[in-house]
Amino acid sequence: MAAAGHEVHVVTTVRRRESPREVDGVRVWPLGYWWRAKQAARPEVVVTVAGDRQAERLAPNLTRAPRLVLPQADADFGEFEEACIRRLPAHRKVQARVTVPADPLAGERIKVVAWIHYGVPYRRAGSETMLQTMMRALRDAGMGVLVVCSSMPEAPLSWEVDGVPYLHLSPHTAELLFQSMRPQVMVTHHNYAARATGLAREIGARSVLLMHSDHDFSARSLWAGPDLIVYNTEWVRASLATRYLEVDRTPALVVRPPVLPDEHRAPATGDRVTLVNLSSDKGVYTWRAVAHALPQLPFLGVTGAHGQQVTGPALANMRVLPQTSDMRGDVWAHTRVLLMPSVYESYGMAAVEALASGIPVIAHPTPGLCEALGEAGTFIDRDDHRAWADAVTNLYAEGPRRAQATAAALARSAFLASQARTDLAAWTDAVNGLAESVPEQRGALAAAAAG
View 1: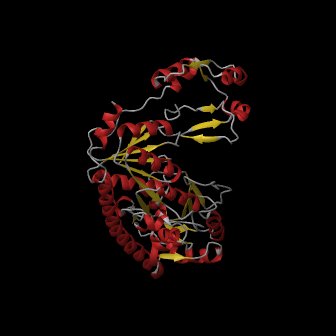
View 2: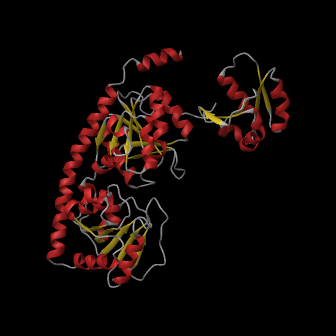
View 3: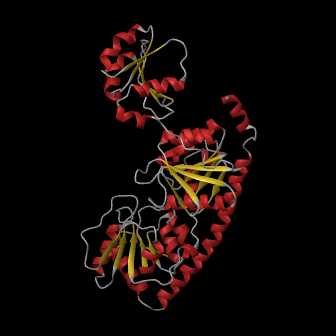
């Protein structure tokens, strides 16, 4: 029942000295905790087993909800689920019946699915954009791909981005879909990393974990035991290797966030000094300090997908733009200098996108921005606002300094584009190898067992 998407609580009537725990998605409460179970569950249906005297005594105290008595013999799951649903209020019956979509990749020889929290175009931070490009590369290589998002209520049930199909499903429905379609490879990151890795193991698929930072709260997913770890930079892999044994024990690949210049290059650039993502961590207060120091220059702020956005009070030379899926037309075409005063960037895709248009970038020297920008970046500590204002003044004006920075940006963009093509080729080869390592008889054996 829990795997089918229902919230299930079990009160054991055997007296044991133990604490509440979770087993396979079911919250198990020892008898001494029955009152807490009632408060936590607020059950809509109470199920007891015939002949359990403790349960018969306790059930009336739990709730006035309808009661279902199971025979002591085994019950058919489908009949049991339907019997529970029939006892729900009318307005809850439709919601309680979980509808699992048909296999969207039926007939594909290789099926690669990604299970994630957010996806483009509704959320367009670096990790979502990177995953989209990587899944598109697999599709272009002839593999069947699907991305399932499970934490994005603003999204429709299905959509497509550059030929990559997306679904928005609840976590339980997503699990049921994956169990039925049985992909060869599951890709994941962030919120669903551990859960997707465990599910892949259960269904006999290979798992790929994308690591976008060296934060410990993300690195805990390494313990789930993926078959392949993809790091977004060399420095992230090196940083994690000092703290996690799994880094050296698990096959790995480094794929820098792919930015293909032709997809981001603006025909002409504009006159704005731009910051993408108006949060404190991304450096909104540095950007505002520079705007205050240079009132004669126009500034552009673009709200981001993550973090508390600081959009006011606006100065006379500031313009704030909502998050956009058309960065080329809405942002780079209006930008003359890009500021990246981030306290942390594992890579910095916005900076690399700006390079494609020859836009000079001033950045705080995080390891990720240093690896991404190389000699094309102008690096200044984010707290030295006077130095930032001086750098903007020098790079904004026409002259040898700006010409040199523009040439360096275009050269770096070309280098990173070549690197991205190499990284994506290695990525598709690695996923294809994982898919081919899944035993061909897996599907037939599973079907025989189900029958």
